[in-house]
Length: 165
View 1: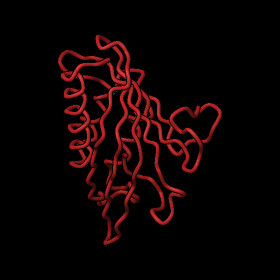
View 2: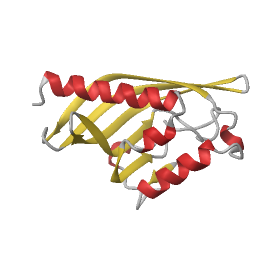
View 3: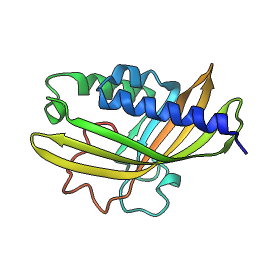
View 4: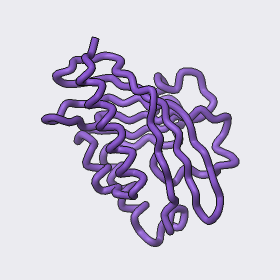
C-alpha cells in the first residue's frame, strides 16, 4: 500500500497540473508527459470507460505524445477559433487515491474532477474521474497516461471539447 508521502506528492502534482491548465501554460503542461505519454478522453455514456481501448472504440480524444504536442500548438494559435480567446477554466481535483503500482517507478492514481469553463458568457461544467499512470521523475512525476472519464450523458449542451480536461 502506498504511503502518505506518496499520496501527498501525487496530490501536489495533480494540483500543479490543474494550475498549468487553468493558466493556459500548455507548453509546460505538455512537458509533464513521458515521451510515450497519452492523453485520453473516452466517449461519454459507456460502461467502464477506464478500461476502454482507443484501438477498438471511438474516443473523444486519443492523443499520443506527438498529437499532444500538435494539440498544444493548435490551441495556442489565435486562428484556433474554438478556443481563442481562451476559455477561462477552473480545474478542481479531489478524492485523490493511489491505487497501486511500484512506488519507485509507475503509480496508478485516480481522482475526481470538476472543470468549470466560461467563454463568451456561456458557462459549462464538466465532471468525471481521472485515471493517471504516473512515472517517478526525481522528486516529482511525469504522466505516462492521463484518462479523463466524463460523467455526462452527452457533451451537449457543453458542445465540443476544445480545451484540455
